[in-house]
Amino acid sequence: MLLGWSHVIPQVKTNYTFIGWHNAFNVLGEIRGNDPVRIARKAGQISLSLISALFLFINIAYVAAVPREDIQNSGQLIALLFFRNVFGETGAKAFPLMVALSCLGNIVSKLTTQHIQKTYISIDCCGTFSA
Image 1 (cartoon, helix red, strand yellow):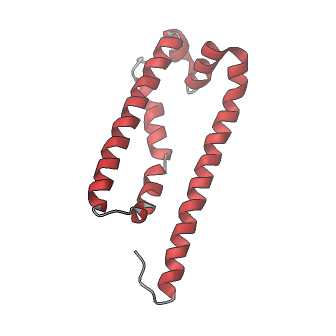
Image 2 (cartoon, helix red, strand yellow; image 1 turned 90 degrees about the horizontal axis):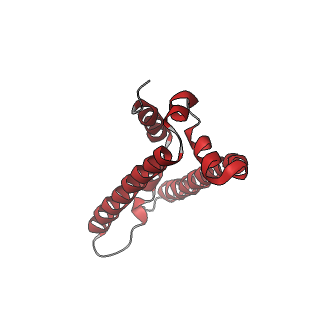
Image 3 (cartoon, helix red, strand yellow; image 1 turned 60 degrees about the vertical axis):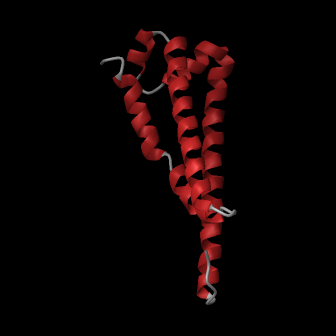
């Protein structure tokens, strides 16, 4: 397998499983100010630039910390290899905890947006206009 594909496949899987974009658009109605369109555009550009730079630096860190042979033979465990090589066995044991915390953050985000949606739906059902 080519070295490039070992980086592309996890990124594609990450993009398909990340529902943060959906949640961001759910709370877009919460923007306050004189020009919410300008604020949303600026926030979108800043966040996309930041996330793109972080993804680039994370991939550079993976390549720098994990030998090429390990990446080619690992399948989908590159992050675990990274934690083991950088932080030792303690980091490898802490990695599942970090994955669990990430899942918890996703659940909290989803619950928050569902609460906002239910609030707007209940206001609409009562006959009052909502944003």
